[in-house]
Image 1: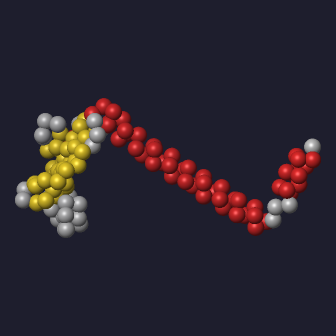
Image 2: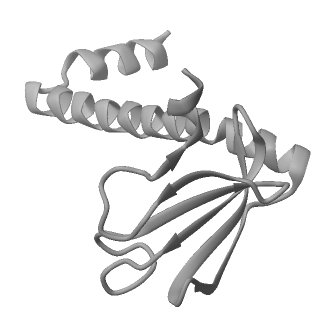
Length: 129
């Protein structure tokens, strides 16, 4: 009983500063756990797509005379596996003002926004509504 009394007595003697430090540490741990949970939730669709279709691959290439970043393996909710091509940005494929093209697995263009443009010239979703 003396051991339990010493433990309980020690808890009762904690200073307000110690309790505040403990509260901050617990809040920080909770924040880290919340961040980890959000990241896991965000990654679930991508993990499922990778299970079904393999990993997303990115490579550099050329598109219409511009250095391009080509990503394969993304799953569009309407079209299935698609390829994203980013090109023509200031300083590189993903720079300011970059263009973006999305191709389906049969190479149909479902989205196209040219470099420097804010509105896509092709957007299959807006034409289906």
